[in-house]
Image 1: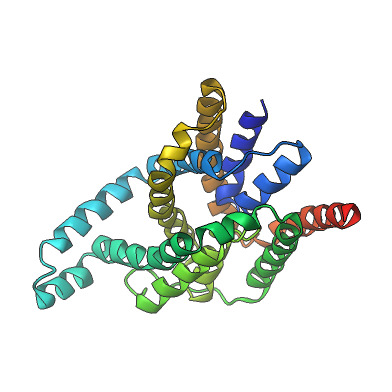
Image 2: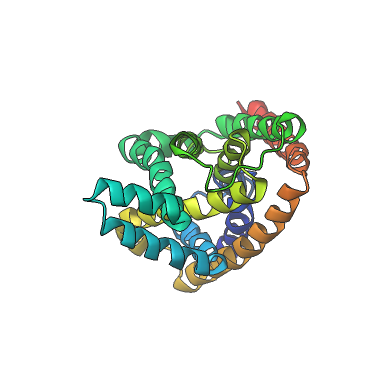
Length: 274
């Protein structure tokens, strides 16, 4: 049953700005279990990946179709530029690709370094507190923007991409930091959330394909694997819907109080044990 619980934790925290990786570290600590490697976590991420695909299935179909159409004219610079400017789904898809590059490169070349960080609960606690502080400042002090996809540019995509790469560190929320960066770049809050959620697809898909051989070797009963995957899918689906409503109603700071509490308590426990 521990694995089902971890699936619930993953689904809820992947899209809420509270760091799914940080909560998985805390959950394993509190349950006194240790799951070696990141294969099981990758499986849970695949559950949330399917949640994004189902929720945004119509948008994703349009993005894929527009991207393929743009590829057909990429060897004609003038025609390609005009197509990107007039087809906003094509522009959206290329911006997503740009945002994916930083996280993909950093994750690939520094994989072992970041995997070792998952064994550092004190760092995780500090990063949870840091995430909470950033959410509070974003909600309270950043001026509301209304930039849509038509006005979004290359620099916006790059900076959001680096925000996603930074979130490889356990305790740093991927959805939180990509959305905060989007808000800082004056994106409309609903667009910032949608962009963040869909942006998770290529990075999770890439990691899943890369870790697929390890997933097949997980020594966990198959029924628990399926159950945890399904729970991650369902909880992730509803978490996206709930969080989008909270984001547009300027309630990011509510997550700050939670992160300060959970991060502070976890930090104290680990300092006592030193």
